[in-house]
Image 1 (cartoon, one colour):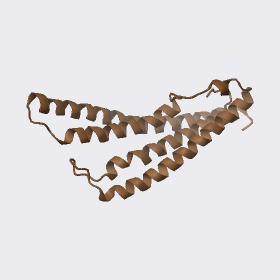
Image 2: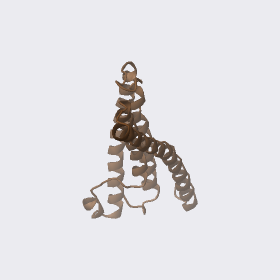
Image 3: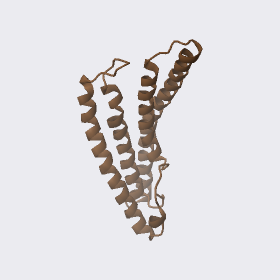
Image 4: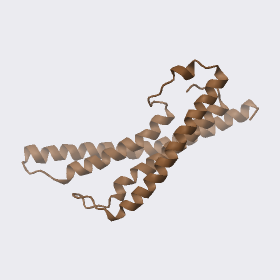
Length: 171
C-alpha cells in the first residue's frame, strides 16, 4: 500500500462498496418510513373520521419504525453523523489520533458483532412468537436488528480501512 495510485484505487473500491451498502439500507428505510406514514394516517382517519378504529395500525407502524431506525444506523455510520466525543482525540498528534480512532472503531466493531450475533439468535427464536394484532411471526420484526447490525458492521469495517489507508480523513 505504499504507492499512491494503489491507495487511491483501494479507497475508490471501499467508497463504492460503502455506497452500495448505504443504498441497500436506504431504499428499504425510505419504503418503511413511507409505509409507516401511510399506516398512521390510515389509522387516524379510521379512528377519528370514520369512528371505526383499526387495531393493527399501531403495531404495524411500530414494527416499520423499528426497521427504519435500525437501517438508518449504518447510513449514519458511514456519513459520520452519529454523536461522538472527539475533544480528546482531536488534541492528539496526527499519528496517535489516527490509531486511537481506529481503536474506537474496533471497539464499535466488536459491539456490532455481538449485537448482530445475538440479534440473529433472538430473531430465530422469535419464529414461534406471533404478534398479537398482525398475526405474523415476530421473526419479521426482530430480524431488523441482525440485518441492520450486519450493514453497520460492514460500514465500520470500511471506515477502519479508510482511516488506515488515508490518514488525512478525519474521524
